[in-house]
Image 1 (spheres, helix red, strand yellow):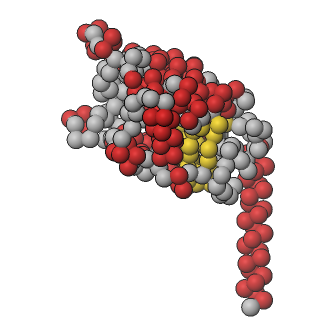
Image 2: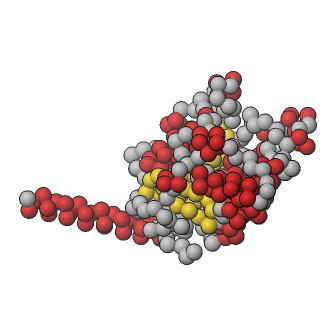
Amino acid sequence: MPKYYDFLNEMKFCKRHLLWHNIFLYMSNKPSILSVHAHPDDEASKGSATVARYSKQGVHTVLVCCTGGEEGDILNPAMDTSDVRANLAEIRLEELRRSAKIIGYNEVVMLGYRDSGMPDSPANKDPRSFAAAPVQEATAALVKVIRRTKPQVIITYDRNSSGYLHPDHLKVHDISVAGFHASGDPDLFPDSGPPWQPAKLYYTVWSAKRVQALHEKLLANGHQSPFNESWLSRLTPADDITTVIDISKEWDVRFEALRAHATQIDPNSGFWAVLNSDLARQAYPYDDYILAMSRVGFSKDETDLFERVTMLSQ
């Protein structure tokens, strides 16, 4: 019994020592966030206001975009011309640059794969597509970026991308999780640079609480709501949310970044107008996340992605 007890105490000491060692290591480097997204415009619709908030605080922000969005439909009638269709890849890249500047990203890294298109489409089989890329190859490319930019925090998608089963979104999850673990292992991908272990990995999600609050606010003020039961059924339950970021001061960033993607966003669409309305800001001025992996401990009710890492002031 004494030996077992001493062993447990020794293990607890080692874990505490490792925890403080990690915190010292993370605090000795400039705070950095790396977001991994599938296509141009995803960086605007998911977590953009959060990134803008941290960018204003001086956090180094890096965007990894895995594909060029070549298979995206032109969803804005004003942009649906023969010239745009013929040059869609170049136009979407320029839209991405404008959006990233609005959000405040310090660096944009294109992973270099082709848009895989929707599930079961011919584009899935294109050998240049992200869906066709070997997971190990794509993970190595991401690990190289992680090790060079040294983020304490990584933002990515959950396992089923909140119900949006696009092959590229699912692949983003796979390589982000693999990259989080592999980047700190010196035995893995030795050609991708010296090891660096991120502290935390988050899933950016749409919570049921957020959509329900917006739905009720719209109805209470005599407006139609674009949200129905099918919407609510694919959203993240409130109990799964670990981290809620106040984006009230950065609220307009998301819509301005989305507008930069003129081929994808119709500014006259009722859906996007609703999401950017003052009613939406009043209903739920937050971005929601799930803390999926952590080297510095877990907790719920976080209000800072760097909690227990650099303890940025609110």
